[in-house]
Figure 1 (cartoon, rainbow, N blue to C red):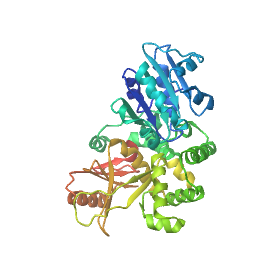
Figure 2: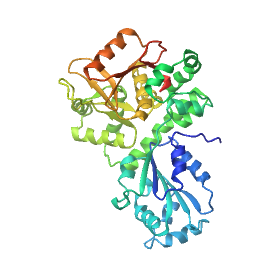
Figure 3: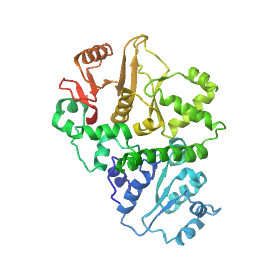
Figure 4: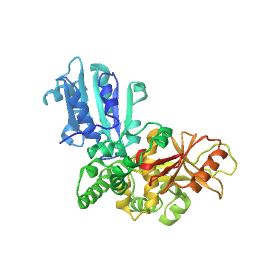
Amino acid sequence: MKIYDRRLSGQLFDEIKLPRLVILTGMRQVGKTTLMRQVFRKIDSPHKISLDLENPLNQKIFEEENFDNILANLAELGFTAGKKSYIFLDEVQAAPNIVKAVKYLFDHYRIKFFLTGSSSFYLKNLFPESLAGRKVVYELFPLDFAEFLLFRQKQKKINGKLSAKAKGKNKVSFELYKKLFNEYLEFGGFPAVALEPDRTRKKQVLEDIFKSYFEKDVKTLADFHQLGKLRDLILLLTGRAGSKMEISKAASELGLSRETVYSYLSFLEKTYFIYAVSPFSGGIDGEVRGAKKTYFCDTGLLNYLGRIPDGAILENAVFLNLKKYGSLNYYEKYKGPEIDFILNKKIACEVKTKGDNPDLKKLKRMAGILRMKEYYLIAKDFSVLPHTIPAQDL
């Protein structure tokens, strides 16, 4: 099977020669295992081994009181430690007790570890403070549109800065990739979905991804007694993607306490299922404070979970493709107009199906109020107006 480069591929290749633990985290089935396999193959050394910790037999290798005995266990699988040795461990959250063993082997035998797992909370907090500066955490997400095109064996020249995207947009290029972008909006960016040509099968893969998330991450990582209520919260959020999450209202609708809703939302965030976007705080009177907007990890999954308006799907897709440029907030004056996204606290971005003059003038006026010189309408349709960017160019 052909393995495609990801945005993180180069950075992980560079990590091979650096003396630190590498942790790759992200939601299930975003391609962590495939990416690590790519790194594994890149290593020119006989002293390497890759193990899946969801296999109980592999967990047992590390269950030794004397950690030196672990090397003897690994030797039975053909691994021997050398001057430069590498151990790849997949799905570390399945065996959190091996952390001390990993640290010991790293400290005493200088073995380089590459670790993957599907929860930021568990992986970021799993390793002790004594490893500060000696470990690095990378996050892998579903494909952005540029990666999606590579998986479809297409290549689109995409400018780096937003200003260059606004100036360098091209109608011929836009039309060339329009159909693929519509497919991306509908089915999202999970690699297995992107590579599947059949529409019916795509939906089946999305169903499998959701079931896997619920069966493996929710049931094994969370200590929730009312899984049906968590499911109901996910469905509630589905209908409000891109909207502010009113905790009290959600708690009332679901028959839960505010604290329980908060704990559910925290879990969904830390396992990469949703993202919460905070309001922009720029010291301007009349800002809405506190309420966060919710976006889903993937538009295909969002479409699988419910019937979502096209505008909400587009905004969710723009969020997913815009977040790689930095931090995102939203802005809204009390009972007044809002700006969908504030990028890095200095660039105003509004999402529209069409980029027309009235919307552009309104955005310019709002950006001026916030003293922001840079502003863009990000549109699904092509527009020749200045300060407009085709959503497919992000």
